[in-house]
Image 1 (cartoon, rainbow, N blue to C red):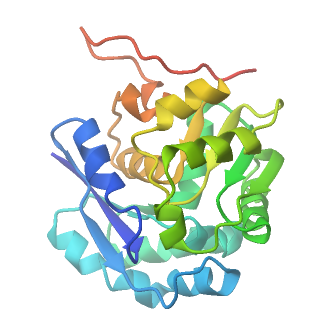
Image 2: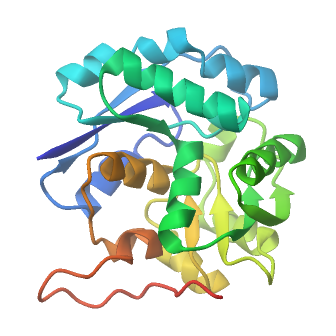
Length: 254
């Protein structure tokens, strides 16, 4: 059994995680604890407030009791709004509090790009343009070449959670760029778990989404590698188990 503990702010697309759990091996669990938020908006101040040490620490003990072997702060904006150094300090503080390896969705995006061997990305964010630019700046601090950034203008998590697959397609296509090797959808409030292969087929390149990379990062921290092509190219970079069907993943373009 491998257990990845997730801290998630408020309520939006948390039902993505039980879906991901079903799509992964039967001995993987992803228990989730909801942290408090003051307001349902994604502005710089509210994002930073969601990621304070006090708010994150509140959920740690419950996840420890659930047997978590790693912890991931499943809130992109609540980490990248602190910048590259601040996000890593946030994760380090969480690890000290929990006594477990810890990370965040924002850091996970960079780790996932390294896994794919990609460095040029397009940011297809649901956020406002200024918040999308914050995420792009975070990636660039991490050595990622952001060739295009687009914000979708969705201010609240509840509005993002109500988005259907057609809106996800619009975001991905509008945010893509010919020079990008990978397209990033950095919002844990979007329901994306069921749609990654479809989005990859649409744009013809790997797609990384917030909830997808959050779980992948938690597994990486436990040294657990999973072959699950229904979750996209990121989960199909390793050799498939004997007898498994070949993935329909998209190759990273050079």
